Image (cartoon, rainbow, N blue to C red; front, side, top):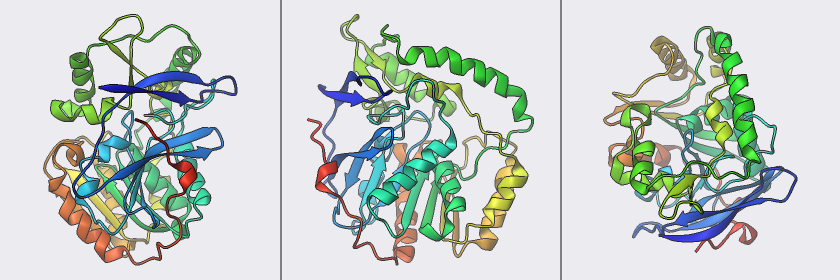
Length: 343
């Protein structure tokens, strides 16, 4: 394992510097370039998968994951379309929000808009897993004319948990707890790689196979200066606050009517819904009515089926992209000033 210096802009003060592990990832089918794209609060890091001279599909990962969640899937998808897989704010190598800020769903929506404006995209093609799928859904409801197609993996809509307001007080208290960690000079708890693998694999009913946890933790850890041979997590501790969303099912039903663009959905047969199951299928039924092509599929595997077993979904995604890759992609390719050397 090798290490490089990575700068996270956490506030208007001097940036903090961490050291994150790097693994060279390549595929006989597809290569990528590491990128850093400037945004108003710092930068968004990610991987731009070839081809580089066309507008890519923008890929957003799940909660506390990072762009490498797509490392095993993207090489299996359409090789005539590029993919830009990013680390959302607070995740991976991307800047954290300034001290005192809370992570809301709309912050992630603003990331999509910021990148789209920066590259002058006429349309946006979106691929999201879990939190990334929910973010893509929200963006598509707000800017439906800008989205040519939407792909959602194991999540679609924002969760509308009954009586959510009852839990907001705990989330607010948690914010003050974790916000204190942001500028704290004390090193976070550290773990062996074996312990990190177990911690990464466990959530969502042991969703990630141990052998693939490296794809997630490699952009999320740094070596401990206090305990040689151990590592600590560098993702923003404020991500642990949880969902501060208060949107209700009635509003989600209303905004879902905007989603007339083609939509691909892959849902694990065994993963959770994290809300009343009927909420999910009420929205899916609407999408089947209003979307130009709502391609809904059940797939085998856990919440991270796209990482553990990407073959289960790659072919049906490829066919969906082939059907709906009709908009002009000639404008919006990679720019030299966003490419960085992480080796």
